[in-house]
Length: 438
Image (cartoon, rainbow, N blue to C red; front, side, top):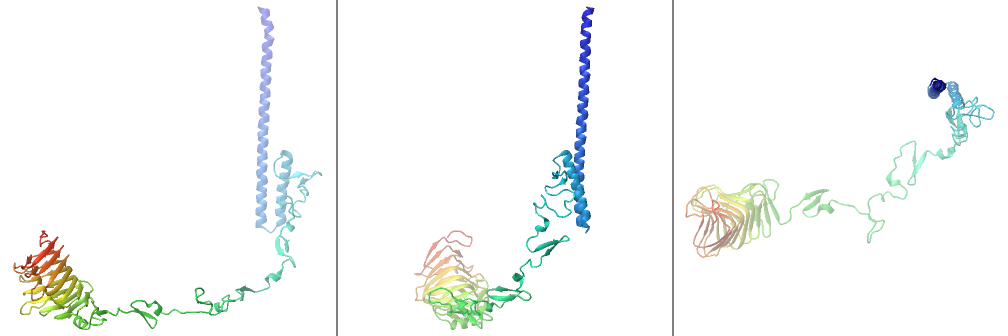
């Protein structure tokens, strides 16, 4: 048993020695790796220093006229870079030439940048070759070589515009009438195409050419001229200042237009075929102080105004009276009384009376009648649409009164105080004062 132990003891000692040796090798490798890291850090520091030197040299060159100092600083930086490349490789672009000097492929480091900048920086060209033809570099400044620029190209102090010389030293304003190829009259608008036109034809435009319908040119000014068949009634500036005079001078197919305002029309005739028109039924008011206001003739028309009774003469009268065998049309008109007497809004003795959008409002007397068709040897009829008819409050005086044997047609209207008389009234869609169907 003891002999067995003696044989194995040396074996254990050998294993321990090998372990120690392995540890020693590992320590050495660690020290070598640390050394390499330190060397790499040194390389990086040198690279940074070279970059700092490069920047400092550039700054000094920009701030001072001492170009030699800047070149020396740059050369020092390149020296360091070249040596670093020899020691560690891959840093900078310097290399050793066959003579063992550090620099570019054709210049050693000691003379690099002291005579001229070339090599890889200038594309293997000398700086003096870079400016181009006719240019030089002297003491760091760019100059023009004698005879290097063709001054003949700049000899003229003028330019040619459309065949005309314009001085560069003074005003370049050119009279448009002097342009070559464009005569003093040719620069204006003229016809250049179309049948029967030639290059020498010219034309002018006068205000009269723009006048058109109802416009005239007076001393270069366009004025409005009403159509020949329109007569204007206005307080100021019209053809007439009162309605009766205008109507007495009108004939078919004249239109008498009445501007906003109030105008008296006592016992005024509207001639046959004449139209009486206001600005609107609320702005143009015609009033009556006699037994009748307007007397209607054949084929006349009244539109867009108000006619009212303001006086109370003895006996009955009519705001509008019709004694014509033809047709009379009243549209967009209000007829009303402001007095207390026995009056008719409209009284027709003959012909056909057409009302469209008309209000006949007899509101101040119980004995008033809105519209009356009266049998007085004639044969009056009425066609009333979209209107309002109101008579007096007395049951004997109605909104519409039609004598025996006469006929009226009423549609889509409001009939207040009802219909009287023995005649025939044809109704469609009519209502009473309370909007109850009739």
